[in-house]
Amino acid sequence: MIKAFIFDVDGTLADTERDGHRVAFNQAFEQAGLDWFWSEQTYGELLAVTGGKERIKFFLQTHNKPEKDHADLEQLIKFLHARKTENYVALLSQNAIPLRPGVKRLLQEAQAANIRLAIATTTTPQNVTALLENALGKESLNWFEVIGAGDIVPLKKPAPDIYDYVLQQMQLTAADCIAFEDSLNGIRSSRAANLKTIITYNDYTCDDDFSAALLVLDQLGEADNPSQQLLKKTGQPFLTVDSILQLCDEVL
Image (cartoon, rainbow, N blue to C red):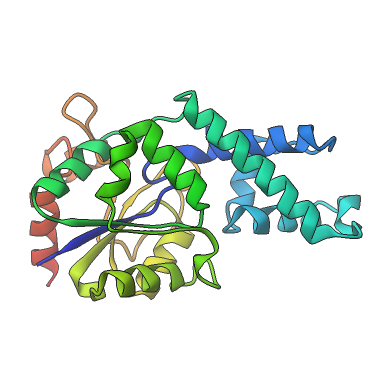
């Protein structure tokens, strides 16, 4: 019996990358007087690197920016990332980044079915809090038994550390849980922790290799905004707790 659902955040709960984090990064660069600009294509390439600070460092190295030789590079990166986080939270407060279709519904269904909830993400705790509070209300923070986020573990995805941490905190085994992810690095992380994984891909990740997933969907779906992938597979418009549990039983 599945006891818990563990959710990634960026790209899984909401399409935060293109219209959230990317925009906030560009605002931070402008605020710092830098001439950097991450287009949608550039940001898509940078998503191969997990973690905002790591992404900045990778950009400096691969685009041969003079700032890569900054006397205190680590402090510059920390400053830019902090400003980016402030900008991102401001975007969320303006309700600029809605949840993906079916997310709120499935979370509420899981609660009603006594399925425990948790988060495993590389984004900062502030980003998680801001997204949940603005999209679901402040009380939604209490929906999640554990929020594993940011630098709470030494290695970020695709390492399994964040999932191992969440499982340890919940005192559950991987067999007790389902992970929800949207990217190649995400499923590498969840599968390395031996978690069965459901993928809801997005425009940045639609061509990733998800052959290790339990199920791959374009979205969780709603009655009036169905998952096209699920319609093709089962004729059902959206994914439910019951269908997830049934799917897990079939693969055991």
